[in-house]
Image (cartoon, rainbow, N blue to C red; front, side):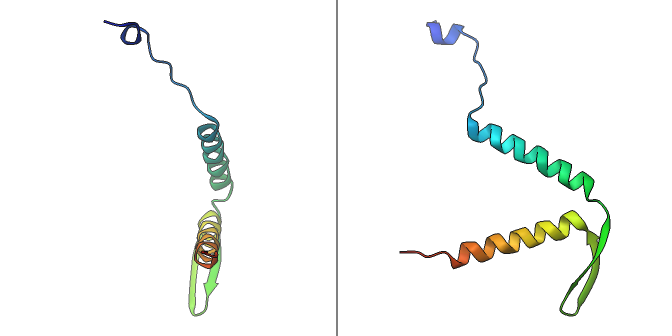
Amino acid sequence: MNEDEQKPRRFALNSKQWAAIALVIVALVFILQNLTYVRAEFFLIHTAAPLWLVLLVTLAAGYAIGWFSKRRD
């Protein structure tokens, strides 16, 4: 056995992983604070949905618009 096999492996997180964990925690807090239902209307569609879901759908639509509208040189 060489030295690498004998040493216990340490689990280390890089800065991107810490940022992802922080964003997940913020998202969970946001969801838990916005569980109330709101009335959402879109053209002829009327529904009631949790506020966090309405905002998540709006965020996803904005992301998709940005993704499809960015310039490709």
